[in-house]
Length: 277
Ligand code: FES
Image (cartoon, rainbow, N blue to C red):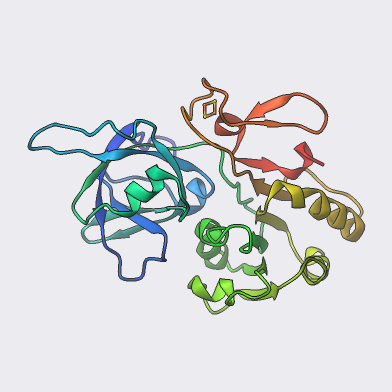
């Protein structure tokens, strides 16, 4: 946001809308206000969505699914009718996610956010490397999408190194990437590390959606190729359970390798890799 822009409301009710080009698993909400966020400013952030439809007629709510679900931002889209915020809805057995998958166009969902520390795209970044582990998480690349167009718009280039399941479909092809984006797909760990090694020297900045178990290998490869891991070079988003989203409940704590814990909702969910390696 620019200085002087009005702050976005803390809580708001978004109207579920249908986007023909939406990815499977994306939830699009029409915003009741005109936000000044740019996509890259909220990439990696999360929105706490109430699992209950807000009825303006009866003002009644179903509190059966009390806890809000934290959904990651996949994009923000403005047109003549207003602005939509797109969120990633995991397709898993969670009852809240299942409930949200059944909402209908026109339903109004109460939301808080976007919150959290997201990816920080540096002004000078022209070569952006995105790491997505689609075998572990089908939404990994979708959550990195808000970083793609802003990088291309400034004359930069984007490369994706994606790890897909050996017997699965070509995961990245399910996500509509702009033509200039270079995509490298690996079906096993060795191939994936090979692509990483080849692209790291080219990259100005790396943003990743990888399981924490893989962060050590990424850090080690960065040190091998670039001799050191500088702060600001590589950022990773942690998959933590968010409940309150404000630092109060400790549901989202992640342990730090040097000892102690941190709360992903206030200090993350995107972390600099130097915190963990
Ligand atoms: S979600 Fe409650 S402390 Fe982070």
